[in-house]
Image (tube, rainbow, N blue to C red; front, top):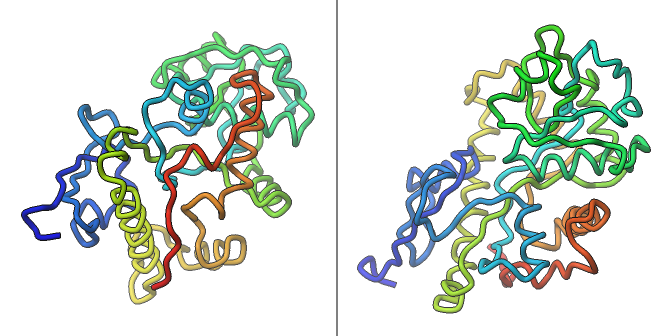
Length: 291
């Protein structure tokens, strides 16, 4: 396409390192004039939304969007559980019957946390009393004892707030080595109507996101000077390579099938969907290519 024919698109997404090259123009989507905007920006054709929300709405037939298999945000979950030190919670089983605050915009984190508690620690979802909280109020409500625990955000660990799992990183590594699941939090979506009008668009955006991720990894691996203020960054990269291989943040359905299938299973177990979820029908088809 000529420059004049480039399709103008707005994308609402967190400004992560893996999309930095898209924001700066170092990587451009073929046929598209793409601008990045904050996650809450309105009137954006491409949006980053919570994976659990998308899967649940799509399974119910309520969504007018279709997902591009690009997953901007992932997070392990043992480090996202905090407790009030006076609430009598010494371990995961003690969460049963307690009041647990969940940030209202963190439903996917809550899904994965509840799944980990059930599958790794034997704590049934039915035993947990979840309370919706504003994200900004989560720490203050926990410190005041209005809730006994909080899910979904890293909180300051000033008394009486403490992490339930101080060794969360080691626990997350163990679970990943056992299951191969690196929890997905968000996904990019576009309107079904836009996909129907421009069937080439999803592939163009997918390739651009892949290229931006490769650009980011290349920048991160540059050993001549540390790109971020992390003194042991290169050691962390070595550990990342050991655990994840060449691509720690895979896009596309197939490399993430186990994770996506588990997400669908957790939604069923937690009563948010009924019946089977056909993962392949929820994403735009992407033709494999080699470069």
